[in-house]
Length: 297
Image (cartoon, rainbow, N blue to C red; front, side, top):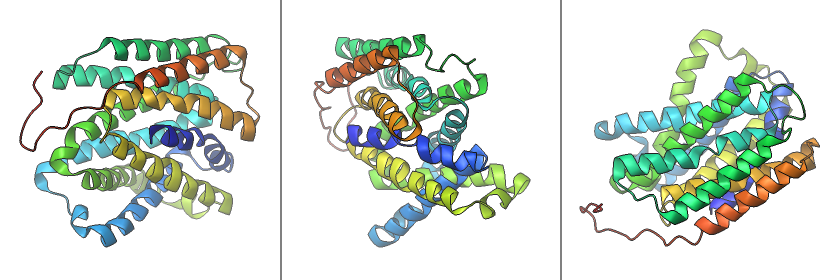
């Protein structure tokens, strides 16, 4: 499930480039893709379980926080980064997420930082370092805003993964999934529409709308849905490390569709990242706990 999700995430580069080259600001692209995702999920919820669309006061704080970081900031940061720096570099910087998830799990849940996780994360980060070391930006000066946006996206994704692995038992997996997007879309709409209106969206060409629709359906609803299902079977840390597989996928898609060449260092880095994913896949699945009990640490 994680590998299928990463293949979808890795394909984001082309539609993002199409939309931004047609003049759509990255923040409006984030609004459009989350809007498509929210409408799709709301439609599914109406048929499957309409009650998940009604927020519960006790869960509103967590859902709003998760939606703000995991959807609104994550989508906006990724759009800004991919519009300003190479696609492969964007995903390399985003994949600092496993360290954050590992830290969150240790501090807030007492989850052990096992030798397997340390080695897998170390392999992955070495792959990131090697790939960044030789001209991933093709000899050009690194755009600081694009790099910062990618790093913020990695942190936001880590929050989403951690909350997804922690809160599903209390809130419900499907409710958490739907409500996170509802809150995230609401946060983006309130931040953008009152001050800037809907002009860029209403005047967007068909190619931009198709790009936003693709991003909303596949890398957003499809990939994050697979992530939520995967978190039922593996830990948040394992999911975050496994998500590093989007880097080789992003390199492949960027080479096929955008002609962005992958140097030897990037290829070596990708091999190490794949090795880290294979290693973490050997981690045993978390043991189920009866309802009402807590994990002992």
